[in-house]
Image (cartoon, rainbow, N blue to C red; front, side, top):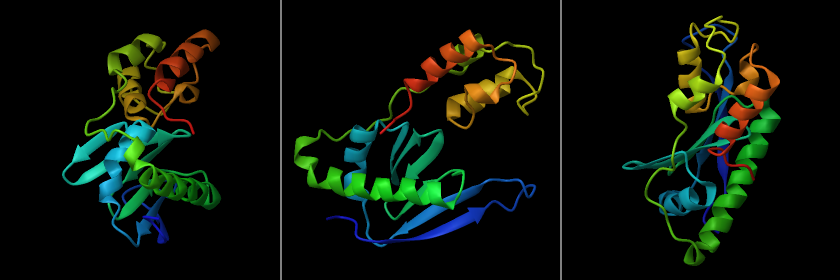
Length: 174
């Protein structure tokens, strides 16, 4: 077993309104840098960096980043969801480490959603109902993983399905 324990910390960014979401940081008691390229292969990392080593991916519409000594979960809906995600990741980390001889490590990022492809699927009304000033800004956030089809109120059923399908090919689902 590579990873035995961690401590958790819920943080709220202080540079905004009180409505800012809570983030979870799991501080790992062991260094897991050696397993990160294997996790990138197993989890389909959205972004992989070599130095310092880290892998990012989307899980249940949450951005998750794994570093050698911490795991960051962006905006879990509550403490319980954040803890479940971290517990699942701990199991995945240890399982991946145990099976590393069977896994080809990956040292590059996976393909990313293209902003213009996302924009093509949006209504392009620049209505601001999503909280963004333009559809282009919304598309940029969607490409980064922080916005999704449900965050665009004027998006109709067919276009919502198309956008979900497009973004879904870049998201890992356990």
